[in-house]
Image (cartoon, rainbow, N blue to C red; front, top):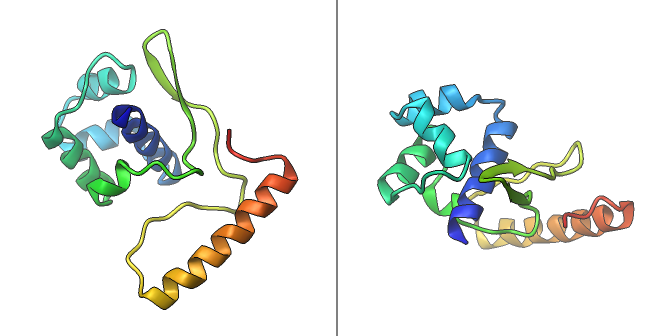
Length: 125
């Protein structure tokens, strides 16, 4: 289960950052074929590999293991993982360290955005 969450977050960040798998592989210090095996469901990452990928994406590893409701779904089709849903245009998902007051404001914005997404029919599945 965590592998699917991890891969969904990696694929989302690649898309958000407009980064290629080739660039990610180079930054993470691994071969493109191994990264391809990971994204095709033919290999499982070790903790060391997950940490290298997180560092290459410039995000904390725990953020790649979180499963928020807005994370795009990843479906396995013939051993391949693919991103199946993105947030509506104009919305982004971020992970941040905030003060209690800032977090309160962000939670209110998040709730309002989720309601707007649900009403527009673009709710994540």
